[in-house]
Length: 423
Ligand code: HEM
Image 1: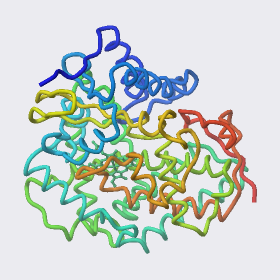
Image 2 (image 1 turned 180 degrees about the horizontal axis):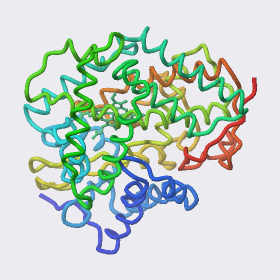
Image 3 (image 1 turned 90 degrees about the vertical axis):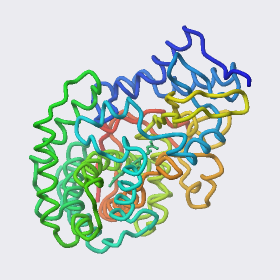
């Protein structure tokens, strides 16, 4: 069998510098404001996409071996295959993910394999109502989102402005209410613990694990879940069968972490809607969901999908050994100007017509490991957007321009994004 193509040493270094380093520097587990700002200023996200375009032009569809351990996916059909054939032979547990996530959730589904993974996946799907547009808690969750958002709006009207700090504060209250209920609404200690552990996790192998802190965090989650407050996910969790292998606290820890990108995406969607006003229709939830979906296509919050090969696999142009880490860099597939007519513009209609499937757009991943929180994220985010749009109009006042007539920037620094708010 032929050999898969392989980058030269110089190209491997350039790949690490241009493709892997920017998302790692920005913070895989928790974002670092300075690095996000630098990425926007230097247009690093666009450079990563351009570099992969060059490698694809040089080596064809790949997979392309990089150094001794990595293989990068360059063909949309290969993305579909890797995601569909997860977790065998493409396991989700890679050494890189384990090093990061073990800091705060060592038994999480993302870094599990075999029967344990199956059990933990079942838990997430049941608890989060995966595959249903409206979670079974829709009524109570929507009420809480609207209440918190109304409070945020009142403040925004007073100051005539909306900043990330205010938005993020309201969002984290919504998250705690969604997961645990009123009991956690103002539980800043929980958020502080999460933030500390996630800062350690950003450093993966390079930071010592703080086991006592992790134990305190997981026990705190267990205690809050024990309250099983009606109308919260904790109440749903209480009704779901579990075994020792489920490791419930380690799964719920992931929710706390994963709701962050959901808030970032909601805020970015507001920015896109404020400059693409034809889509800003407060009463059309389907459209708002599609807008969020396209915002996360344009600005993916999980730009690196990683898989560990558990066996040798055959491809059109050669075989790939076991124990390699496969890399899907999603911006390359979402923003590929050579292939996609809509690469750099806001195109929510893709998600309403089903056309998105045709193009391999995978901001929530796909296949058996697809994000089980996708529908919940789109539900909560669209609920919040609908309340915001019904209550005010928003105009970007920070330096970012999202002009519909020009290609959208590759990076959108949410930390610095600010709006003027008018009635
Ligand atoms: C904008 C928000 C979010 C985005 C873009 C997102 C995206 C993703 C992606 C891309 C993956 C798969 C990674 C892979 O294939 O290796 C994933 C996995 C996962 N997500 Fe999300 N996610 C979001 C929010 C959430 C939320 C709020 C929850 C929970 C409430 C959640 C729960 C999970 C879980 C449990 C997994 C692991 C699934 C598995 O390995 O089987 N996500 N997410």
